[in-house]
Image (cartoon, rainbow, N blue to C red; front, side, top):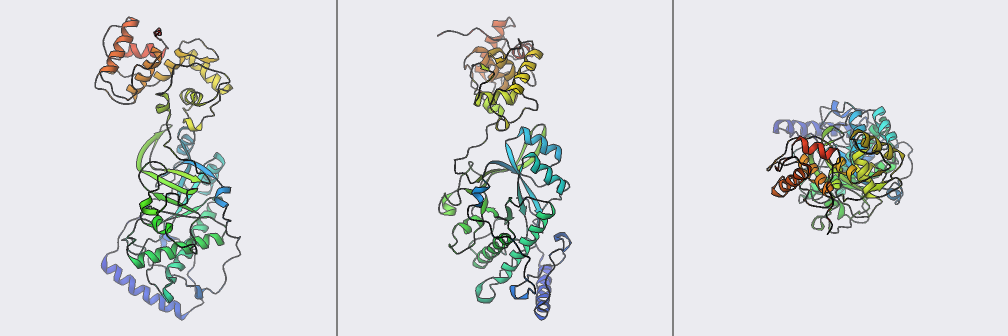
Length: 474
């Protein structure tokens, strides 16, 4: 996650501790005073004094009941989500809604350690994403564990009877601020609000216990306001602690864990049981990757969301990956299934991600196919035959390729040659080796284009027009 990581110089730390002691004395002398909740986090220059339970003069506002135990299942969602330091522009969201595998997006509501400014994040932005079908993962980045080097940290003082009341009070405070920020943006109450607590040393007793007290107070207070609670952390720290809490502890409704591995992996050495919150978790499985969908490139983290779903997850296969597996089989109007999804991601306007296609050869797909056939000199029919598949699979840039070349253009060449041959003659791996050069020589020789193993503009033109070879009968 993206957090501000400033550490505290020693002189500032000493002065802050002295100042905090003075403020605590003042608050104790005036029990009717409460720290106002409407002070923007960015405007605070000194640590906020926790509001202890006996210092509250008035009860909190009337709130709905806490979400029922089945609330997560009632708002089930299984799919992929991304999070970026800044909320993307509307253009980026629109492009990615169609062309990416994602159905959810993480947004940073605020907190003293939110790292990036949010130029696009507004009430109108949230409303538009919700209308478009995006699921939101709101994140609050407040004070961090006491044993970290962050500027704002959770109090580790055990206090009365070792209950860590200062940490609990701060958890209540942060929950109220997060609720206020979510309501200001009109974030739907059905969305879980996650607290981002970065990795810390779980072996330090007071650090561990104060963090758990803080997170429990966070969860209870969100429930008082009718919101579901979530906690983001690394699987080896915050999530590991939560998985080992007693039954009396108020766990969050959803956990969001960072662990770079296969999608959906929950390592038993950290949580004791891989089944921990199986149907109530988000897995952040890839960090800081730069990807491009729909012509818009962003630096993101990849997440798999499993709320109310227990089916095993797998990494989303893109159009390029699925197209590499296409076999020479015709597809006609009325067809359904995975092959139609590949067709749609290749031919429909905007090149949608396979997960965003219907898998039905409907009227819109038929129009797109006929338009493509006309533009490439093919007979416009209601079916996609081997010639049309060959042209579709070659679609894209047409650089001159020879032995030693690598990349996406080589993959397109290989998969199109397979279709033109009517059988798998090449492994689609993006590596222009001797086997690929041999296939290119054979294709060129059969078309009278010479016997060189170089894919030039004439080869691309022939593939783009759907020129196929006679199928050898075995």
